[in-house]
Amino acid sequence: MTSLRPFTCDDMFRFNNINLDPLTETYGVGFYLQYLARWPEYFVVAEAPSGQLMGYIMGKAEGNGENWHGHVTAVTCAVSHRRLGLAGRLMAALEAISEKKRCYFVDLFVRVSNAAAIKMYTLLGYTVYRTVLQYYSGDTDEDAYDMRKALSRDVNGQSCIPLPRPVHIYEIDC
Image (cartoon, rainbow, N blue to C red):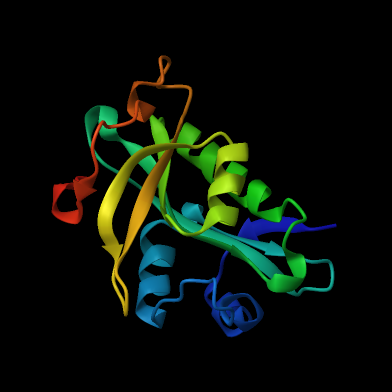
């Protein structure tokens, strides 16, 4: 049976089976360590009974006032463990942490071309709040959807009412 547990520094030596995939956004060691040190409760790994890492989620809590929210920085599963509901379990874990921190909503950014991820997030209750123009840079810049899911503190779902127009990255506030 798969278990979810806190990510540890040692896991950084064991997560290549998850990160060495073209669909997975990877970061430098310092970035992972920063999240682990600053928001350890938001860094969760899924582990198989054999000890093999199957996936992870990392995020943080940020914002002020009614913009206080949980943010999904990355969620990914090893290719061999996709389409098993594991990403949904990891997302639920982050949402539960955000509820405990009394956040109003959880948000994430996803490439507009990533139809599979958008479908999964929609099935998990997320909606497109806004389009962020040229959020992803590279050979071809790409827009992102800022998707949100209201938590219990946002009784009327005010934080998820879609904006009427796309925004530029410099217009984003935490």
